[in-house]
Image (cartoon, rainbow, N blue to C red; front, top):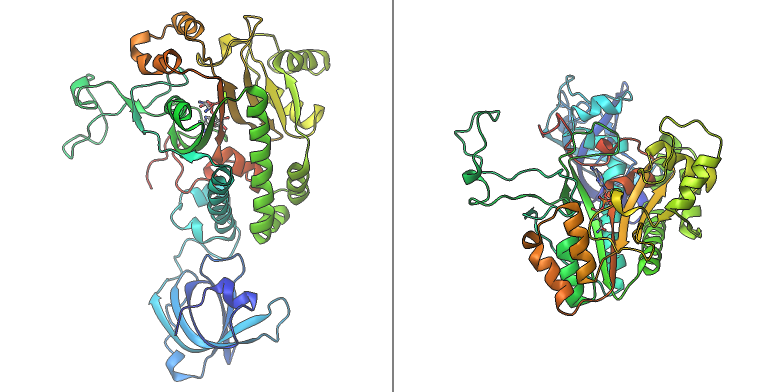
Length: 460
Ligand code: 4AD
Ligand code: MG
């Protein structure tokens, strides 16, 4: 007897008759003659109702069959007389694979997300996190499908690297950990125990290596873990997150924005088509109007304004901000929210930022003051994409590196790309978790990562 997933059983895809189902008990309701078990196996939001005849002797020892138990049920899939569910399973035999007592931490009541983070290994069995991680999985696949359909090459860029791509000094250092090390580091820095004596860190971006690949394969993308040692306790920052970074040869900033817009719309459409049930759950329980918002984004014309226009807009709007907007200063999250939530009421590309607040590799504009950068901002979440056209001119790039104090020897290979066969190219990075926050309505980045890495969170 082949195993049937709950999703198949509920969808009517399975012939009525004998089936075998395994999963985890959500609730048990006992009446005098019958017990009703709601069973979930992670394949979908809904539970399969198992009807158990309390008299049947092979079903009698159900003592540890409480919420949280793992069971195997042989039974008869039949049309359900109850409203709200097309099918139910009449149990013939139940085996308790792993019992659960009443101290199981996930009880039927609604738990707060903060509490659920302390049981990150069990929160996966709740409705919300089931939905989050199904959407995360589906959208990971969609990312690959989008780029593969367009002929982009997938490249695995290194995790351990000597390059600080963003130059923000937020890298984790890589060192050797031995079983004899005390639980917490103490004492002086011993570089000899770093990467075989070399100074290295965990990557903050795969872009620099991605550029090398784009200068050989034309269109490429990365999709992998990314690390930032910023000790910021916000709802949008994690020390470990996943970034998608396409890089295109022969592309300028306009082409970069077009690709980013097409990509975001593709992902929204994919989620609406393939995660309808889970998105409906988020729409009902997490963010009202979510489905409408995503449907609108899937069709939207993306708004675009330059950084200079954005600052003028902020200065002229008459709003009292905590940080008053000034040309040359980075946009604060209150500014990003105002622009997306009140000015354009939707996603917005802001382009051409001052060079001094952006990374060294961005292409200098003719004004000598701004660079061909773009950030994509969305309501509520703020920045989800950062990208740019890259500086392909050797002399200009060397000048910029000197300005910000990057030794040319440290990035000689990167300069080589401008020395031999340089070409205009552009790319961007989408923070996968930030995008998932937008799509699900979840408001804390810790709740869209399986086991979040934020200050104080490395246990799981
Ligand atoms: O704007 P960022 O720093 O850009 C880059 O790293 C470029 N090298 C990308 C490129 O052009 N190839 O980061 C890109 C995106 C941000 O817009 C944000 O969505 C996400 O990565 N991000 C974070 N997400 C979660 N936690 C953090 N600490 C993040 N830092 C950046
Ligand atoms: Mg950025």
